[in-house]
Image (cartoon, rainbow, N blue to C red; front, side, top):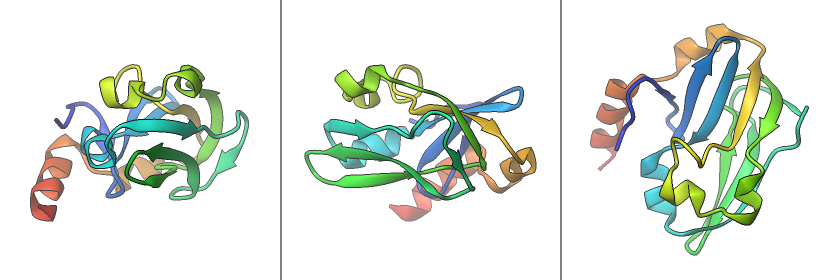
Length: 127
């Protein structure tokens, strides 16, 4: 399922923009491909990342996968419940399974991301 109102990367991260901050997670497609998520290595609060830097790791029964920062900025908050309940990514990747909130350093980078329609087309071309 591709959720409307979010922006997406080709690496299957999603971004929900709220003012000058961005909530980041992995898409439904990504969590399906990973299978049952067993561990999430969250970024450190106050850590800064450039666009496309690896910032977190999601591990599953199938693989470990880097999560790339879709937009340059500083981590304001991490979703600490994922430390004890990584399965939230499988159960609710767009709501309860978000990874972190980033204070955007360069909002113009949002223009490089795909809207829901473009991401849906991207997924269709990949299959």
